[in-house]
Length: 247
Figure 1 (cartoon, one colour):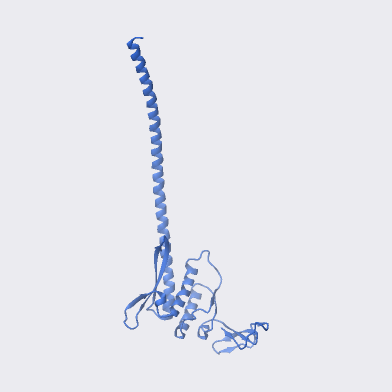
Figure 2 (figure 1 turned 30 degrees about the horizontal axis):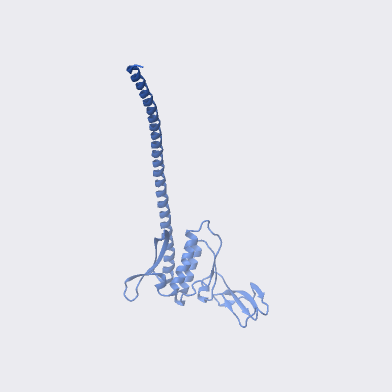
């Protein structure tokens, strides 16, 4: 075989290798373009998800902030109704361990210095304030955050039992305000006659010699009705000596 034939065969072999490598290059180029297109699509999807996430966070923050303000308003109204306009309730929202945390504060005027003082509720003028705040927060949660809404009356067992006699009537007036504002009937058990006097209707429960009777009580005349609204006779092992009165 002549040298020219060897050169021609070698050239054809190189051309075949080139064609093969060029074909592989084109395949890789198409794969690269496909991957780049996928990357661009993923980046756009990521950007959209980040926008949606940001919107959801802002919406959640806005809803949480709106709820915070409504709760502050309800509790501040309670404190001011009972103790006077110098009281303000504040909620600070924070995060601890990746979870939201709420800190409560009461701002009031120091009666001796006239300076505004900000304390946690347990440090603010005794247990009566804690009672009012606890009740108002329950009302606020019921009104602001409860979904679906719970219907029916609000039932209270000895509300404001640590509120002093000086403020208990104001507390009763606030209960009336809550009832009318949120269209909720309030049923309560209390040993405080002054608080019972703020109710639209008062019933007195008496336990005498093992017999329980419940009668209507007229707060204007301080008299019981003659007939029982309800009557129950306990067994001997349930009975106690002497009367017990619950309003």
